[in-house]
Amino acid sequence: MQPDTSKPVAELESVSKIYGDVIAVDDMNLAIAPGEFLSFLGPSGCGKTTALRMLAGFETPTVGTVRIDGQDMSGQEAYRRPVNMVFQSYALFPHLTVGGNIGYGLKQQRPKLDKATISEKVARALDVVRLSGFADRRIWEMSGGQQQRVALARAIVNEPKLLLLDEPLAALDRKLRKEMQIELQDLQRQLGITFVLVTHDQEEALSLSDRICVMREGRIVQIGTPQQLYDSPKSRYVADFVGTSNFFDGKIQSTSGTTAAIALGDGLTYNARLSGPVQPGDTACLSIRPEQIHIRRVESDGAIPGRILNRIFLGEHTEYLIRSETLGNIAVLAPRQSDQGLGDLSTNDNVWLQWASEAALILEND
Image (cartoon, rainbow, N blue to C red; front, side):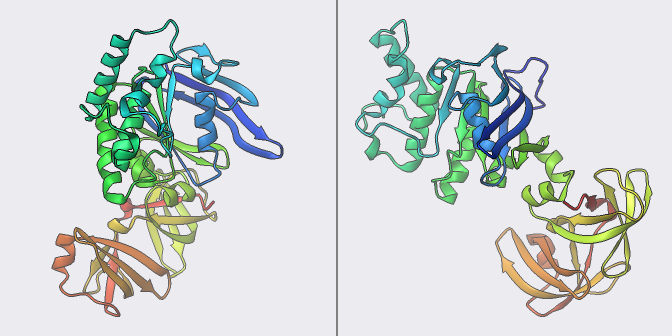
């Protein structure tokens, strides 16, 4: 979806969080649209969890304003906010049943809900996460994936405006994590609740999100759809964090509209798209995704000679590491069909590499 932020469900306005000499979040401005799936993506210590905790009410901004549904949340305790949070550890009560965990928050509501209403809401939440009939099970009898669903059911049973997810899939194995990513996305679409996810896993952010906020040192350095961030990163940092890329340092030779020519270490000049304004003489880097590079058996115009250092067969594609004497190591990802057409390539084979000018991007070398 393309989020409509004209009437945001939540806002961070000029928000900063400072711990002594450490600026955890630095002047963040963000509007979160109703019904969107937004992710904070970045390395440890970039401020993404602090931003999430300020939305939840577990942290108070040093400066700035947090609004939810148009209301200033200053001084509003976490339990009074129309927000629920799913933690990485799930934070389930081991002494309670599945139904007891899910209904715990409902029992704290004032005015009190009657038992029949609570039971009905718990049953509905269990049905949504596909755990109907598990209400009387003990938490320790549930698998990791089932416990994750219980945590989700507990979070959605109160019908929050915002559902905050703090790396909820990190403890799961790869296969189960993939399955839960699909379930999480289906659940968000089914409920229409705004989801805000914190993750350091780029694949998770790309597969789940409507928009991604890439963070660095407490700031959002770029925000956009997964495709925008992957195809048109604004800096080397974003290109390196969202996906995998090859980077070659060079100097701008000339510019023409949205393209430029850059001279690399091999002495040759390459044309590429521009991610931002540059001038002739500027230093910059050329970024090319591994899947955009084609391997050739024979030389052709503009192709770069190289030698295969490593080949890893991964079923649907093959990953190559190829050494160019002038540009260094180059990662190439060949889909199965393309790889089969090359015959039996192996380590130490000499090959030629080529890419289209529109596949390459000139980035700020940060």
